[in-house]
Image (cartoon, rainbow, N blue to C red; front, side, top):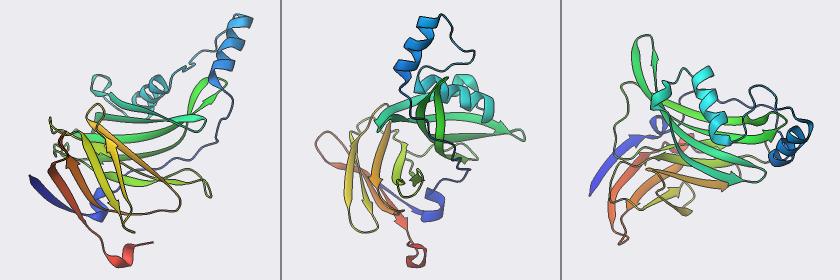
Length: 212
């Protein structure tokens, strides 16, 4: 079993968060409407994955052939999309992991919120952790996600600052855990195999003064 220790600040999202208007109209109804009138608007994105890919290429300078969509997780009227990619800034290559909150609109799917973290040099850790909040108060919620490069990994278990423990399966070399409410910090991560045996853990050094 491997153990690593990181500072809380290094485990959090390092890049921008964008909060835009929420879109509530069902996509399938929009699609049927445009089919009936025989017109599909230019640039329409009729899947959360395609909208995320377009956003990464157009606005995040992602290298197209490095984009990987790891999860598409339904949430309320929208979806959460987990992606990883490489980008080059000032001739330096960096690896990025991102979570996108997508909601349907008249032109397909639109971003309503996002959390992104990038690393120079590219992150090659066996397990990564990024956490933060998405949404608009009072409907905001916590997320914890990352990549898992351990072949035998099946479950990721995290402990929040108040002792609450949550688990999620490893899906396409990634995990995603959500928790409603105000911001909470992750203090511990364990990775388990099919026999529920711990094969990796991350201990996060949290300054009590940082706790919300």
